[in-house]
Image 1 (cartoon, helix red, strand yellow):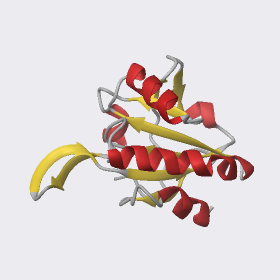
Image 2: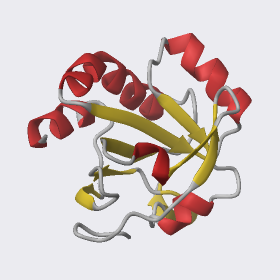
Image 3: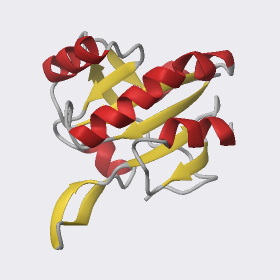
Length: 150
């Protein structure tokens, strides 16, 4: 997994509207890049809604929020509309960004080792440097936890 003080890996991923975003699009801005397993599942919905509910506070601090999962752009569009999510959701079906950030790999689920998305979050500064890593995330309180650090 990427650690604090490292240069954030570049990415090139489409959002729910088909616009392609890369690390360079956030140059000069601090942003939260969070990785989650699947749209519209209980934990992922709780996490997304916590970011939605805290979004104004993130924006007041000049921080953008970006979510990434292996779901399609179409899935993201439905998820965003259903839960009124105001932030960017990026599709990574090939798991390139997920892998580059160490957010995809072996994990334990229901007592079994499986390959999957490791719910994790990175705060990246305007120079593309990782300033904070949250390797284990409680979906319900995560946005508040990040706001407390910012």
